[in-house]
Image 1: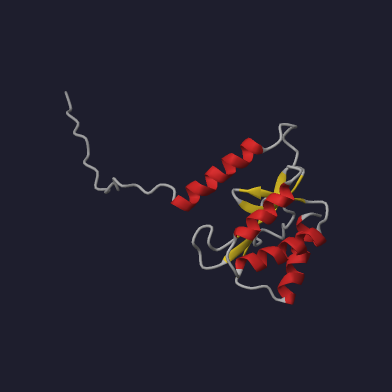
Image 2: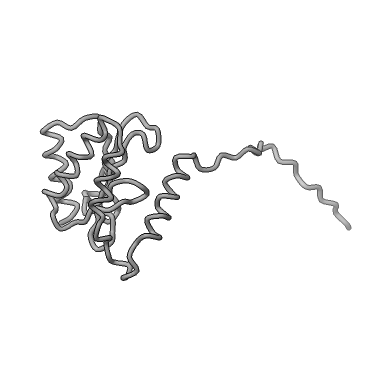
Length: 158
């Protein structure tokens, strides 16, 4: 007996204009590629020696109030963990140890969001049970916020 099979017609609509990366995401990827090309060729675990000047220049480009928060965060992070190195990461100020980014600051304008963020990578030692925050929304910095951030950075680098 010969059976004839018909292909089923899909009822799922396919979006022919599939969305790709936003212009902001594409710009961040281009910045990252540029960072990698300009990185020293000394090996994988090294930080760029002039990373701090790059970070300070990137902060200077930011609009207020993010610029003021980024400047304050830079000071807090450097004071809380003097052994980590500032560097750019996807065009954002970031702080690394042994070549691994531990935390970063993303200004609101970077991806057109309503607030800036302070984020921690999976390399940061923030583990606390089965779930813990790794990104914090920032609209302003109070003295209490600064103390909490300093404590988080110390914990992340422990």
